[in-house]
Amino acid sequence: MATLPSFEDVLAARERLAGRVLPTPVLRVPALDALAGAELYLKCENLQRVGAFKARGAMNAVLSLPEERRERGVVTFSSGNHGQAVALAARELGIPAWVAMPSDAPTVKVDAVRALGAEVVFAGKTSADRYAEAVRIAERTGAVIVPPFDDSHVIAGQGTATLELLEAHPDVDTVVVPVGGGGLLAGACLVAAALGKGTRVVAVEPASANALQKSLERGERTRVEPGPTIADGLRPVEVGELNFQIAKRHVAHAIVVDDVEIERAVVRLLLSGKVLVEPSGGAALAAALERKIPGEPKKIGVLLSGGNVAPSVLTKLIEKHAGG
Image 1 (tube, one colour):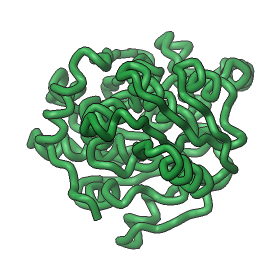
Image 2 (cartoon, helix red, strand yellow; image 1 turned 180 degrees about the horizontal axis):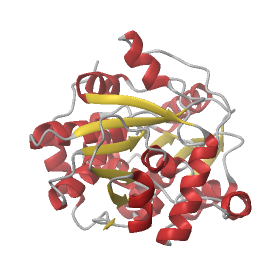
Image 3 (cartoon, rainbow, N blue to C red; image 1 turned 180 degrees about the vertical axis):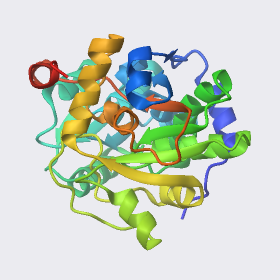
């Protein structure tokens, strides 16, 4: 197993990323506080470059490569946002990029990757399909694989989002994080543990794709067969190895939300806060609004992880849930 990243790696990532990613705002929406029964501090990574927190980890990983390796280009495997993030980093550094994406990836995400100059290669519908294609591309071109979550530099980069949140609001007692592969979660754990304020980290997954919850229950990384969910960015077959090693030490609770709860959260945030998130980006908020977070937290930091949602999906959600 690769070396686990540390809080010092997160601090180094912040320096490396200065001027390349955005220090995103933390918003307050009183109407949502009332629903949650707590003060919510919404970390708006939906306003990050490429519309998602993934810009942090991908940029840090690419910038950390030795120049002689970096110039050969980079390749990744992604359902969307990480692909955009790697494409952005490659464009800024003037190197080629390839992204292996699922054949059923949302059109809005495919178009965004291509617009950033990367070559999209469709590869089945599973993460295994995409990874195999990325390996083939790397072998053929000499490009370096930039994993979407199970990577020390990626985790450290993602941790800068929680670092910004807790430095601005040190009295937050609970940070709620959506979980797919676990990069954002692992970074949050490193920061919360190091700052020593007793801040809890709570992980949130779709009910049909709860790989982390099952892994923590069994004490070992556990593969699942993810079911359908509107949160398409949160359905890996398993969490990353590095991510799990960090999570099992620091995560206070792993909870699940269903699609209806996620949908309601997206619409409530849009109508009450005028803030747009994709379903995956609204999962943590759903847990807060449904009062699923154990321990009666008073000040909750919520990571809104992304905002890349297809207009057709958004229209359906508004029509379904705008009445409440």
